[in-house]
Image 1 (cartoon, rainbow, N blue to C red):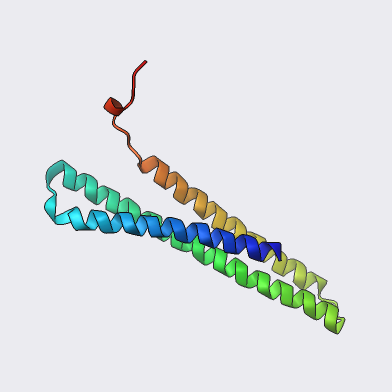
Image 2 (cartoon, rainbow, N blue to C red):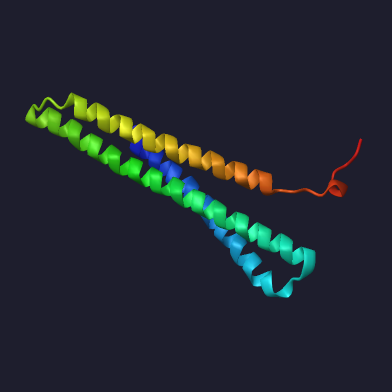
Length: 131
């Protein structure tokens, strides 16, 4: 059951990040026609990066949802094993491993998206205080 709660919390984090990326892309899209030159090129580069981030977050959400579904199957199999006296330990183990793989994939994609976001931040050196 803890896996299902974990997947739900991850989905909450992922959808929050996706919402922020979408909001940022909407703001930049509004400015698209009003820019030119270097500013326009930077805006387009950032929009491309936002599209990539959206794709990665969507894949992380897909893996987390699939993981949640597999956890539901796992709980059902555990219930069936207990209630019907079935000997399906190997199937249960396989389903558990599959749930862990989906969790691993979703976390890996999340890490990749966070890395994309942090590499995109470019602070001009004149904003930094020199010692």
